[in-house]
Image (cartoon, rainbow, N blue to C red; front, side, top):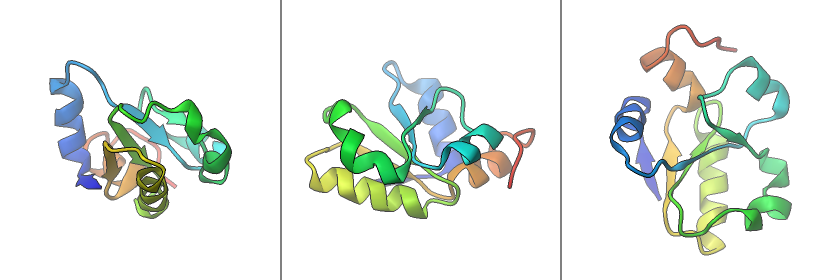
Length: 106
């Protein structure tokens, strides 16, 4: 699994012709506080039931609060056959700190 910083993700999103899926694995209440624009919410607890709705060939950037849950989900998806998984190190907290200081934090 590849890891990417918030700044690298910002640059990647700006340069990409085909955008990766931004998969936010936090809880709905966390997502309501803040999220990266365009991110799809799929809480970690629901991944075993819902991951088959995802395209295993698409690049997927997994996002959480600090990068720990997303790392676990990324590993799970890789074991399920997904080949293009990327973990956002530092999660939305790093995004708010390094890319979008106007984003609420918690």
